Image 1: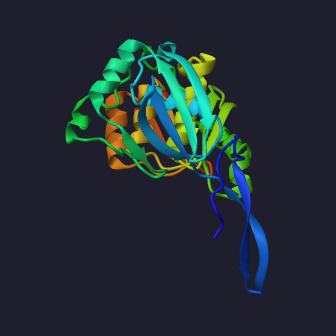
Image 2: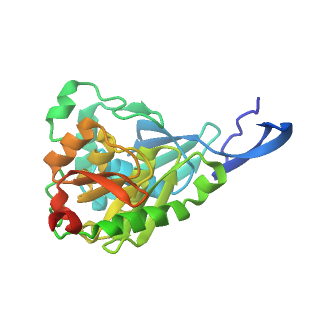
Length: 284
């Protein structure tokens, strides 16, 4: 077994490891490029909050997107600084946030350990679902009702596949992309965790000041409750997934006013909520 190397400097997103390649022709001893998955710890004003397993890429975007998605801050303006430190045990990300946001954070008592496939790790009560879990923050503009062409979904998903460089190298990561109204991709983020990839995208959009009414998000995964939640909280009006949604995700998308499309592949798609935001369906 290969020993885990300490992260005293920024780790690469992949590592080449020995492997036995088995085919009908026999067994070949070779090596494979494998995606890194490292612990990333978030702390706020010196207080530890969460440890996530993630790809060591775009960590500032990840930190900001996670912080916004968890409603630790209401606006990117409440994050004053983000510092990334590489330690022997993993990657430590320290965020300096506004005092009011820090007071709210201390009141939540939601320090947690998150795994790449998790949804609501560390949530301490079922009351979570009764607290407007998917409602965008009041400071965000309501999602635009201007319709998109359905063909834009497929253009975006096609471009997303072509721009998944880490997945092409390893076959082990998800991606989230941001597309303009015509479906052209403006931003792509990858991670071993589908939730993390969307956090990174939300963070990148916030850092760049992107108008979320001017486009939509596409993801290379199923659309779970938390994926819908993250999109809705960011004010995104349309989320397109390559795979299926869950029933809870559909219910939340309907309540949040978010258009949710699934199975966006092969020239087809299924719309589960608010079809009026897609022109070809609204005109039918």
